[in-house]
Length: 300
Image 1 (cartoon, rainbow, N blue to C red):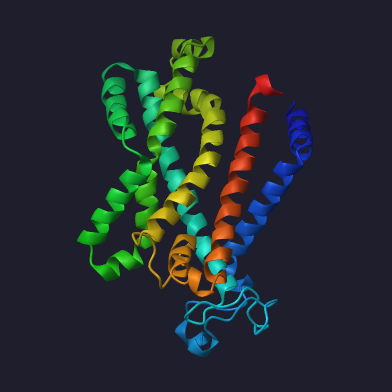
Image 2 (tube, one colour):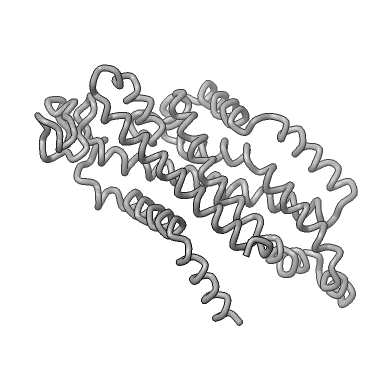
């Protein structure tokens, strides 16, 4: 049975060229960014390895370029390609970490409210509904802004990535909680749950071992979609100056720094990081759409 499921999965996956290409792009980007210190041709944020004399070099195929810098350099002489790989690593780290945090909080709340109901459901879901009334970007912006103004500048700069993960993760758990709660309400009325209760299984075992596996499908789809949302949210916060510092910028910070020079002819410092962010987000969304369709029996 397991072999048939695997065979069916790969058949459906390979039958969608768009999904295959998107998944390949994600794998390449994740590997390249994860191993940026090994893959990047330069170390862009080490003052000892950059020279201001190399600033504003155009891409290698443009007249007047330097072959050492494939995608050119920025106003400080940093290699744009290397900066994109290091920045992409931070963007992916924040996106994956924030979604993992949102998933854990949302699943815990959804499982508790869906299974126990009563006061637990009333209190937790009212809190969720209040937060759901505010856009996640606004909550992340408020949380991150408060910490930036209250923490010392050097401490905030050192803890920028964990703070971004915490801010975006806390802003996005409500959707997971609502989806998990709805699924648990359906599963709770099934005969297998009644059988588990009849034989005296502990509640925690029923929830974790028997109910949780049956609600993971919608959670997986939402998590894939939320990775792209979290990456865009991080880029937005960094673009507004509330994200990662310029000493270790993400893609959003690179776009913000390059946008100031876009109309002065130094287009590559913003176009290439922006294109990488766009490709990353679209690839995650396309794979998430395929996963949603694959897990929906009505569309197969």
